[in-house]
Amino acid sequence: MTGARTGYRWRRLQSLLFIEPAWPAPAPVRAWVTTRPGGVSTGPHAALNLATHVGDDPGAVVRNRERLASALSLPSEPIWLTQVHGSHVLDGPEPARSFADEPADAATTVERGVVLAVLTADCLPVFFADRAGRRVAVAHAGWRGLAQGVLEATLEAMAFDPAELVAWIGPGIEGDCYETGPAVREAFADPEDREFFLPSGRPGHFGVDLAALACARLKRRGVGWVGRCPLGTGGHPELFYSYRRDGETGRMASLIYLDPGQP
Image (tube, rainbow, N blue to C red; front, side, top):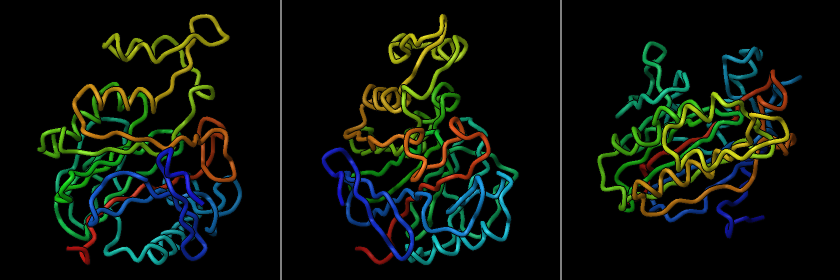
């Protein structure tokens, strides 16, 4: 099954269902978004919850991460960030090292086989690669991160002319499922950003399409190709976790790396 015309492909590997970006990244780049089916977690975290901080059984999370690594034949343990809705970018993180004391919402690397990961349940996972396959990055971008410049910080850390980069935005909360108050709109100083906040049914409140806003910001900064997944987390409970929809819930993972087996 494919949604390539709109930016994604479905891939079933072992018992897990993945979304693969349909984007013009070069051959060494591997990028994946997990979905809910195929894990061992139960209750509000069912089934493939990959986060340790949401109240799930720790043993279930370990088994889910093992299933993930097996299904994708990952070359190393993913680097799980301590995400704080900020704009700090880890540049060149090393496998098998804890980053609990260095909170970050994005990471980038030039090393083959280093698997970068972010966890989401409504916020946007945003993938980056250069057209020659020398560097990759992934960012966790909710409204706070977008307002603080996490995408711009990731572009700066990649150290390429933005025209040489490609970016793909994974599934996040839909605009019609995401109502915000005036404080969120005021956090964006750029009038062009505020155009994505549309009045909702409640006075002084707005619906905001975060993916469209993120696309526009990347294009304004000259990124050579920008695409997005049209699927939203709020309207597909069978596929995606959504904090906005459910409150207590699990997290999907978005992973990117340079395949050490590709020239």
